[in-house]
Length: 286
Image (cartoon, rainbow, N blue to C red; front, side):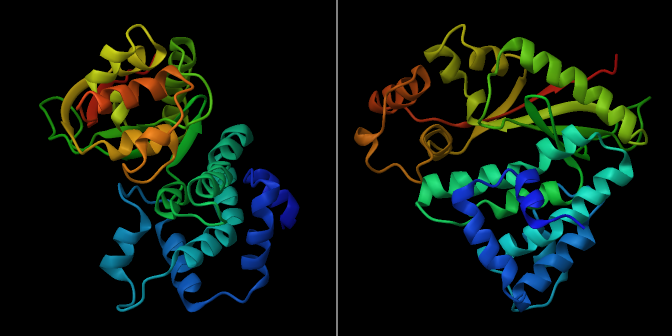
């Protein structure tokens, strides 16, 4: 049994968010929390591409949509079970802890965005809770079946890693190289029956305009690793992930302290827009 403070430390929950977590954990679970918790348990060990709300729409009681608070409670209550699942797979403790620490980070982000305790991004955390998303070094990797059609001479079911970029740390080529190399070794070792062939990234950082605005930067070098398939979406992703602001109002009040902030705002002020890039890179076990 994990003591509560130990759990908070493992989840990297900041002191300012621990009071809200205690309030949720001290209360009797609501019906919505119980539904959310049952959903998390039913997905553990699966390899769904989407968050738990997709599963919930398809197979849970009708007319009941757990609230943000319900999902936050469920994720906190479920965390020890997820840690046990990691341990049963033999996942190294440092990777397990780095993975579940994203819950505390997202609570902190919610406070920055909304100025209050909460977990607006609960759906993102349900991917971690399924037991197939891990932080390995600088990057996070989500193991899912490939959507690419099978080709001659290759397994009928290939697998790919969704590559995600936590906001902390450097995107230096050395850090990214090390993470990619470690990730290939990690998934070969702990999921040997799932042959990973590609990594895929969906991010506004892959918009070629950013490399033009920041030539030679670590961000540009990261984007250049990927073969770009398409661009879609609008500027809201760029503004949210750069400034942690929802929407495009009040851009003139946003800080211009970093080269990235200036690049985002200058492009918008010049009449441009930012798009979300979808790209892939090949992954080969060494």
